[in-house]
Length: 187
Image (cartoon, rainbow, N blue to C red):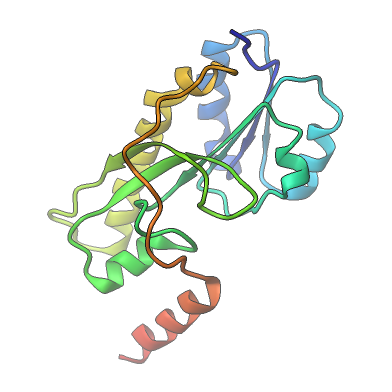
């Protein structure tokens, strides 16, 4: 079973060291890059040797199909459940008073939040005092979801068992998010 020679981590620089160390503990001889923009991805994805794995962690960058085609595998950590695809699902859930929530790890496709789902991890909505508390709880569960599934993601070419979870619901957009904030701030 092949393992990636190159692992590309798309995430905020604040998370990079933790994930670089985590991946290196599984693949000590791999080239591991941490990037936060599409421009940097273009430089790495076409200059490194195959096979490549891409992990996008809580990153809003939409990776075009031409770049996904250069990867042996590509995964995204979506900070919401399968029934809340799209932009800023945590904020929509918080302001709508959601009772159930989860974070989702899925294969990337050219369409946002559309690829096969690898795993979903529930996030408790109990005893939350603020949106910041909710975001922190989602962040912790997102990290745990990646840690729990990293070994599976690193096994390239292995047929994965289909998840029982499927995308549903309307994808939220930045425009809807801006409208929601405007309405919320007017109250």
